[in-house]
Length: 140
Length: 161
Image 1 (cartoon, chains in turn orange, brown):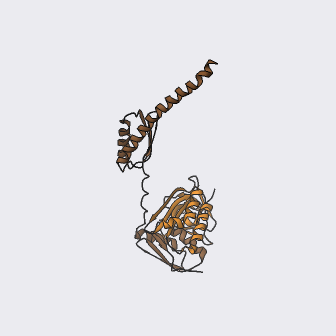
Image 2 (cartoon, helix red, strand yellow; image 1 turned 180 degrees about the vertical axis):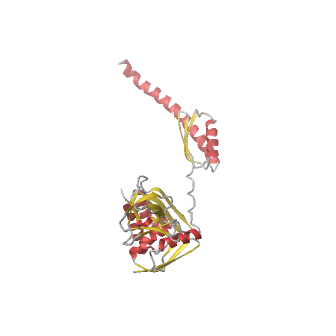
Image 3 (cartoon, chains in turn brown, cyan; image 1 turned 135 degrees about the horizontal axis):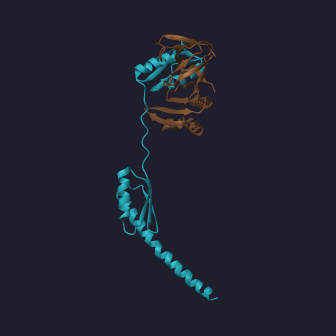
């Protein structure tokens, strides 16, 4: 229960923000918070509170797994790497061969999100494969 | 005028009627409460009785207890019907699923590909991250690692620039 007290501000904020499928569980000295945020801003807000409670996330006693909801209607994603091109691979994994590249800031087609980390995408050149979801941002 | 003279009598009669009813409900309530206390499974249940209608509330251990309690109260003397508002305890949350080391290791390799300044290892579901990294990049990486369903992420040995 001590961990739930420590991160009470965070779980309260998650509840107040209307995180869907919110699950707060404590197991073997680690607190697990799972759920889906309506927007990226809500997710950022929760991570800011986490960073305030545990500066630089050093304690290692919380796994905050909040996804951002993606509208099923979304078919376009923007490549939001820092500056580099994004690899498109044959399968979901960095051990998979690269079948294409998408440029930084390029808008490409989202084909499937069956894997949380690797989304199936298609470029305008017709290259289809898996790209790391962290670098893809849905566009309206 | 006549009606005014009768009024106190009417009030008295009405009063008697009501007070005549009350002990009955109270008696029923008392006997139900007594039987509730007899079993620890129903000790947390509360009861209200109004004109022979017993309303049960509170928490019971399981469905069988709930059904047995309702039947038992219904059969008690003076009970016309039972309004069963008792609830069952919420099911315990499913245990946290931790990704097995093999898929977790490859997922960590994918997540840390663009973070050459750190080394991440996986053992028993725990991701240990070492190296030197900026606070902003560590936050981005921790977000990605927490999404891989690890047991926990240990960054205590990291040097934050």
